[in-house]
Amino acid sequence: MSANPASPSRPTAALSRSHATLPEPEPSPSVLRQFVAVVLPAILISAPLLIITQFTESPSLVSLSGWLQIALIAYSAIRLTMLLVAGVPDLLFGVFWVFVYAALAVPALIQRAAAMAGRGR
Image (cartoon, rainbow, N blue to C red; front, side, top):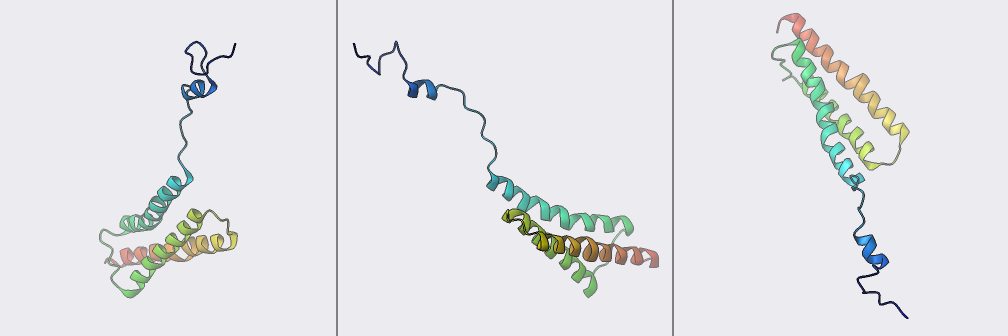
């Protein structure tokens, strides 16, 4: 009395597993990393530039120091994003680039825009 595995009266384990409901797959880490790699620099670079528009109606950052400040903001934002996307915790470099972004790049640009707004340019 051996049971035939293909008989319809008794489903096999493979058939019962194939009809079971599977949980929804979570987004893979690579998709989240790609999302962070696109969105984070866009936010970190555009936020200070949007703040500048609050001080002046048309900020003239054509001088060399203005372009250097924007380049420093962009470079530090990209380095911070690269650290986050890499997934390897590197505390020293992370603290350094947060300091460069938050204490050197953004305040200098906002201070320049405020000074330009005060002069009536």
